[in-house]
Amino acid sequence: MAGAIYYIAQWASPSDEWNQFWWGANVFIFHGILAAVILSWSGVLGVTLALYLREKKEWQTKVLRLVAPVVAILVAIEGLLLGHFQGELVVEHDPLKLAALEGMFWSGLKTDPLTGLVAYGNPNAQFWGYYSWPADIRPPEWVSVFYLGFMVGAGILLGILTAGVGLYFRWGLFKRIVPPLLKPSAYLIPILAALASIGGAVSAESGRFPFILVSSSPDPNGGPPIITGVPVYQGGLFNPTLQLTPWLTALIIIVEVAMPALAGYMVYLALASPPKILKRYIEY
Image (cartoon, rainbow, N blue to C red; front, side, top):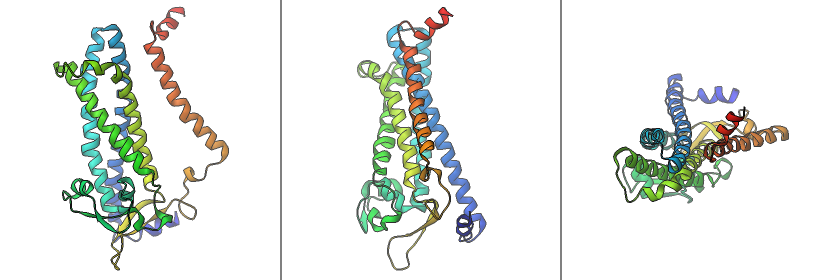
């Protein structure tokens, strides 16, 4: 706590810290809530699509007409709007995390056309590379895989797939393209949503290590920006994810395995022919 108080005192005024926290927290909270909605609705969409391919019932068609385009719209909002706001916060306050997420694995200033175009609208913009900072404050290198591969890649594929399915069921578009994709989409849609959610969570939590409340300031000597913040490792704020006892580690692993296992079992009950869950109700 002493570290947090000292760090907050470095701002020009208390309102500087409050404004950064308030805006950043709102963006992060809504981004996380929307990710949870997309993940849950994608599961509903996948199960309903699988049932539709087997039964072709009217209620299933109605659900697909509603849920598929809504998920596509939510994915677009998540990536293009809230994701953009989060990206702005990273660009402004934490260039080291930006370098790690975007895979800028070089030392010194270099151009990155794609990142420059997205961040500043300028493909000639220059960025400090990941290896420009000391090793003890750099995030893990594999963060870029979860960010670019899981969150961005799976998120884009999820948006395209749900948009295609939604347009097909809503207005009958893409009649030659979508029907062959419906069967694999029943499994791909929930899987892509899960991969994107996992990628986003890992990118957010690991990408900011070893600081929280990160900020940067120009180096008067012309080097990379000076990264400061409240440390989460030993000597800073207590971070339970970095100080796990064996029993707590085992409990977390059990919960992390049990949750997807239970979800998979519920999908099995829903997709079984005849549905196992209905059979059990009849038996009781």
